[in-house]
Image 1 (cartoon, helix red, strand yellow):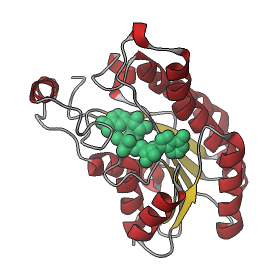
Image 2 (cartoon, protein in one colour; image 1 turned 120 degrees about the vertical axis):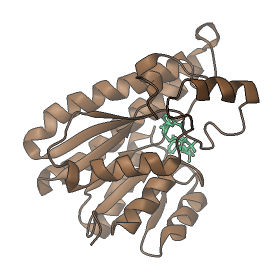
Image 3 (cartoon, protein in one colour; image 1 turned 90 degrees about the vertical axis):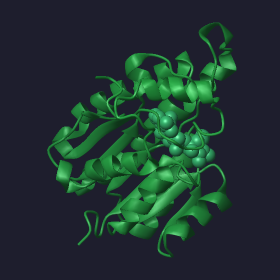
Length: 249
Ligand code: NAD
């Protein structure tokens, strides 16, 4: 039996073919979950869902739009009657230095990470409270812990640090309802967000900082998400799990 048999899971930003969200959706499906893939583009979301199996759902949802989050979750609750797992995975990066950040850059990065995580959680938590069970997994980043990174920019570090605060505050607030909130801090993982933008020198510099000597795979993060989504982590809430090959040792 799979670790998520009979569970219903929502994953944002999961249409990107090489992304962490899609890898997580695939692993959840392999463990018996029915999955909804939410992303900006409806046909991409539907195609990604169909790719992991016919029973899965793809929906358009811009997570910066509170009404869109509410509408997507209402449609899923109509269909499923419950939501067991939410993975707040949607995120964007901008490779800017502090003095280059314009107000619209700041808003865009903050909005996807912080408004998106809050709005999707607000939409899903009432159903989880009624069920007296639920697991929310938020994607933070090593950039929140060590400051900066090659891709992210300081506003990305700030947004991902904000996710850690939101995760702990919501974990504390909803623990009495048995609704858990945990965060994953991936290090350097090979996906579209990181791929294609690296010179060989940049790659060498990054790998020098990773004791395990390799970039992470999307499946490395998906495995951690599976643990946090499933009852294996039933007594974990308000935690952050590093998936970074030892980058912070
Ligand atoms: P990705 O770019 O491959 O996928 C991100 C997805 O989010 C895309 O499908 C995109 O369409 C979607 N998205 C963007 N804005 C959205 C919005 N407003 N509403 C809904 N969907 C939206 O990224 P990834 O590498 O798979 O990263 C996934 C998450 O993990 C992100 O939050 C990222 O910040 C975080 N992360 C990634 C790495 C890494 O090395 N790849 C490291 C640390 C943290």
